[in-house]
Image (cartoon, rainbow, N blue to C red; front, top):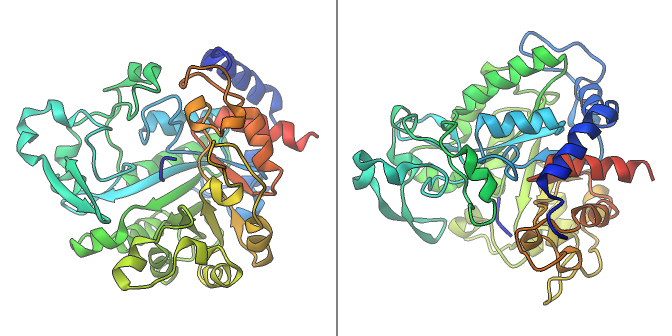
Length: 391
């Protein structure tokens, strides 16, 4: 997804509170997730339940890239921590390898998220490409076989902001999506309830142009692992509506259309000459169109509550009510604890990397009626959701 404190009580304090909280909350955090995810039913041999996305707790807490606030993103370690903290859903972003495998990376550019620059054998793979109209220089997954990618190790993407996360640099490899599916199945069996996944197709138009379409191999994996049904514990998502329309013809798994800033266009619209912008898609007619092939939207938080020129929140838009009127759920993105990522109203102190008043920000967004939220810090989000529901 796009990027858009008091003295840090820091991570240790919040983590400690969250660990104690999830243990004590039981029924509210971890327990609630278990009951709702399984919908009171026994999981099958793959650890999959047969509840629906409508059975998830509200507000639903989605572990963004796992627990990107605490571990290098899109690693098994990041996913595992999100699950252990009690996140209701754990997110994966998918890009292809040269030989057609789907791997979990936020972008196909792996320069910032792996140690590829330290591998002299891959120095010649560094190149400049245009991805969705943006020139990028680095190393890209589509130029590596899976075997080659497996020789790399993940690292923290934004070490200047999250210096403590660098402790885990090199600890985990790049997981394939099939490895994540197997991990979720094993965890589902062990925990006795389904483990929900939230899966994004990244740059699908770009990859289709390279002969590396994402949707068909993804649908094949979902069918193989029994996550292709309307009641499967998995939600699909993409910033390109046509990717969700394509998948709607391949599997019945629930689908969400991600929405960037109002003045932007989905890249598939740009390539097809479709003049609509996100501003058009969040209008009632646009939402009605989305509802014809998807079950929800994932808007940028500013589409729910815009910020003024000073970065302070203004009045909520009508998006929540308008989307709900068309039967769509809303899972906005992305909440992070650090001052630098929070609206100005909730920043504390002068250190941009210290934690601000994340709980206040969560409460403000929850009050709009959203159904869930993506968070780099699912422990904080869970505590905020519990506070909100106990009012």
